[in-house]
Length: 261
Image (tube, rainbow, N blue to C red; front, top):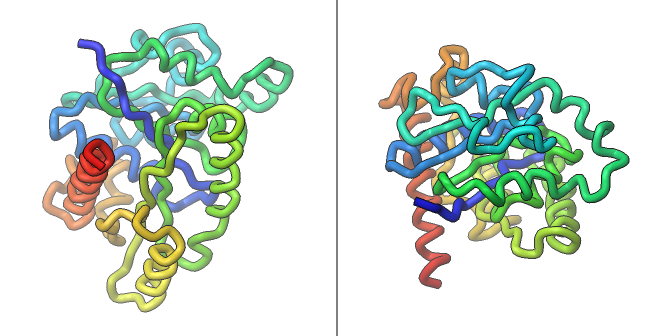
């Protein structure tokens, strides 16, 4: 059955904000609801790949060889042990993309072209590197939506203004339909006055774009990747796993509202 995937670029120019964690666990939560989901790991570090129990692929079929047109998404996506969830693994070859694509005409369009023939998924989540280079630009051009994780810590909004400017440039020049789906508050500490203050500031800045669910600080969340598992499989009952289940419900609710609104 052919499907029209919702494509999300998970992006923030600041590192350590819970970007990969949100990709992996939100994708897992939607897969648990029997949605067919693909994670595209565009970060050379390959953390999304590792967090789902797979290995970075240094040759052959991976996100780099799909980006450069050597293989299709359909033949390169790897099913995980989680039903309905597949991953297009990262490769360290992604490190050279900015230089490699510097003399190419319209290199921002490569991923969009690769995904044009991909009709097997309901959702595609692209894990972007923490920088606005050619990889992130490809993700934004290929996506229908952007999701922005923002951590509830000092300098939380650092880099977000630059990302918003990049999104506007992408909309103007390549992808006019691109929209911010939502902002995810991560690493929230309910005992911390600073966390509460930053959450308030982010909600004041972004308004209704901020999802109702916040992702708390929870030791199980950073522990899970070392076991090659999303936190929902590592410890389903922990508050971190439950928060990502609620976030998935928020995402689906927002989509229903968009559809009927």
